[in-house]
Amino acid sequence: MKIKSAKFITSAPSLRECPTFNLPEFALIGRSNVGKSSFINAIANHNGLAKTSNKPGKTRLINLFLINNEFVIADLPGYGYANVSDKMQREWQKNLEEYLLNRKEIVSLIQFLDCRHDLQKNDLQMSEWINFNNLPYFGLCVKVDEISKNLIPKITASFSKQLKTEVFPFSKMTNRYNDGVLDKMEELIKSYK
Image (cartoon, rainbow, N blue to C red; front, side, top):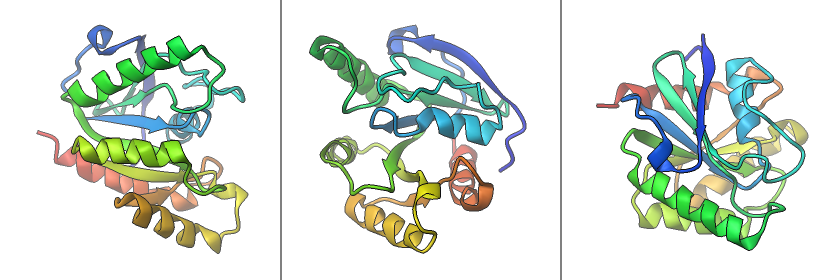
């Protein structure tokens, strides 16, 4: 799949405020600062489209992006460490769960995983929650530019086995690894009814 156009649509604090587009949607989930916004910028070839930060917790709203005028990407607040209050964390959790369970347009969740580290406890908890709720998802192994090329297949296979779902490598620096995830997304878009 070639990405020809990408634009930011809107931000919303919860599902109630999100407009409906009647288009297939991918919800990006992962730890704070794992690279969800960088993924959007990389596939769109537009560095400033999604706001990125070195500081965890920058994404505090559901940010919606229209890609190729044919599907939507929802960039969701990260789970795990963020320098916000417990109350704010609980509010994010509530809004995140409501969105993932009730947004009818979602064709798949994409769970972002940092290939430089073993899967974290909250990655595994999120995967268990997804499987418990029978939600469609696959994994994206990010930051592959920072490890040896020889380790990439081994790590993605290990993550896939642990999470019991497909896991694809992704590089924000080079397109060398990115066809797998884009092909998977295209396949899911075609199956959207």
